[in-house]
Image 1 (cartoon, rainbow, N blue to C red):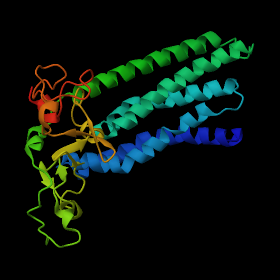
Image 2 (image 1 turned 90 degrees about the vertical axis):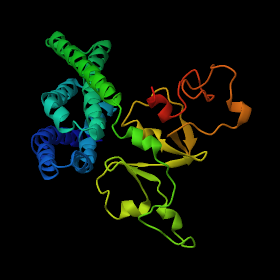
Image 3 (image 1 turned 30 degrees about the vertical axis):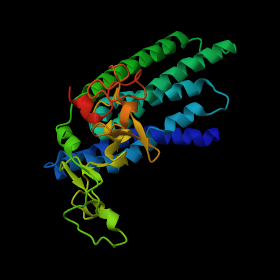
Image 4 (image 1 turned 60 degrees about the vertical axis):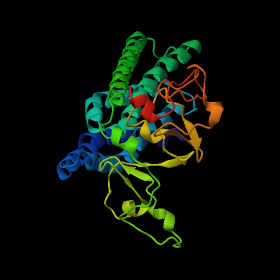
Length: 313
């Protein structure tokens, strides 16, 4: 990318961050909180749909500047420091506006960007010194100290955010006990279809609505009754219901549960899988699920065979 074009975009980006955080994203969050004050899930879903893609693009641009392969000069260091400063100054607002569970990726992206920018500044100083560049000698110690402090500050923020997310992730969702007991893939009583109908499988209840705490079929979803609700797609795995790991891990701590592969996705079964004879029966507890004693494929990495076994503790 031409350096003049990059410089113009850099200046535009600085202004965009200030306006986006203080006005656009902030006002959208206030509007969603007001309009959907009666439903926390709808409030979160609407704001996420509106803001997540735009925020991802906004915090993605500095990566382009850092990755530019053209010859670096002293101005690049101060550009990176300015980009760091504008994000850092708006960090409390970023953390508050994007405080939903579904927008944690935005917070993480902004935080990783702070770390990347501070590390890039230190790296550029090192490169200049190795090439015998003395343009920055007068302010070298001051700027290096600032960059080091910023990096340490960013790492501390990252640790605090990680601790907060782990704490939230370890909390058992209120709906989980009900979810485990639901039998999926039966015919939806609200949308009966003829056995010979071409789309008869669309009334199979293969979705779970977190907000309604109920199973749903494709017709239920299309009807709009679950609009803006959090839903989980349910898959078949050896005659059992299973939920994608990427989806369920947003709601609970999935560590140490043995995942399986269904339709090219890693899934976690609701309940223990059927035993297939002596192969899955063990004379001792070695290499088995701690609860149901079903043999695990990777006992060195996992302790439970399904969601219900882990949550039964």
